[in-house]
Length: 436
Image 1 (cartoon, rainbow, N blue to C red):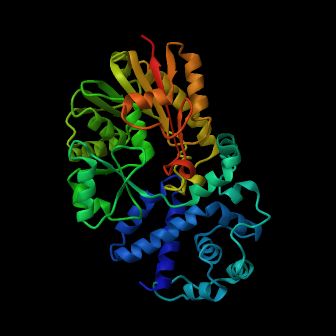
Image 2: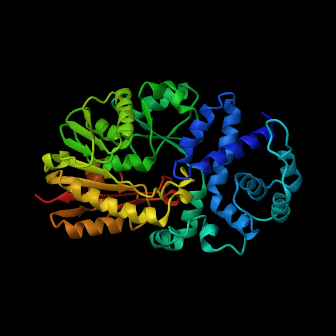
Image 3: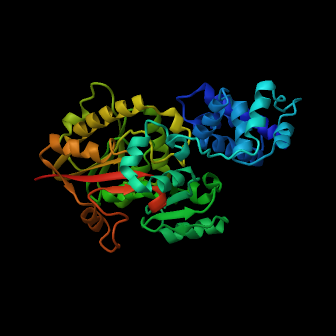
């Protein structure tokens, strides 16, 4: 593809993302490229990276376009991105929209006015309000400010950066060093992570899914913070464990490996599609002590199994406000209304999942959010409703899970991770024990 054809494909991809505003952009992109198999891998990477760059800077680009009285169309977003982020000049942008076959049409008068106004302009304007200046939606800004305080600028800036590729060695198939050697043999360098005993970090994007290490189940893709949540369950061989919001079973896989395929782990979810995907991942990883359960309306599964589980993991549905460097479209896809609905849903899930925990057992509540409303405040409200549960200090849970390890990655009662301070996505986890 010519450079101008790549620009045209980027505009087309962003158009499809805009047409499905509630659908994750990566799902839209996968469908977009499946329907255009003629786009080669190098071109596909270029188109996707630029589209993701636009999504990453969407709040700031929207502000610039609104200041000029123009709508945020896919064409204008790309033009603004080229000028403000990639620092193209006016002439370069005009050459990227030449018209003709496979190319985007030339700018109309309104678009020309935007190009003229933004040529040589900085991305972060002195007149910008706090939200777009930090690249945070207005509804999330109070929560970010409450969580990070004076570190807000650093936390927000780190959320702008592209995430590394984090992997977890599957101990049911081999050790971390064996996984690292297998990757190196395929030309994929990886370094051990600072906290996860299973983690490997690849500094840039690589075709991991096509690697032998992945197809044979030796590795899984999983952020280090997510791995640490699984670790905090303290699961052991012979235990009964429930992963109550399992999704595609990333943490189910990690916990099953901790259990050495002994005992029983149940992966629960409300989506049959996600559980089907989980089944494939479990087979590839060599997990044979897992079962799946579809949570349906009126389901009595939890009531019938009350008090039967040593560990219950609740990786609750949340805004994903800690994963925006990895899922930048979620900044504009999620609203304050979503936050309110999710807080209510989290409360209900916690109350139900708590019934599963046996006396002396533990409930681990986790989110991929950094907003206090979904994290510490949610846990404190739970403890006020359930006098039979107490919080286990992070240092204690960490020591029990990894007796030979050093101190945990953060201090305090909960585990609160963030890109700027830990190099992980933003995660929260609290370990709650049911008193005997």
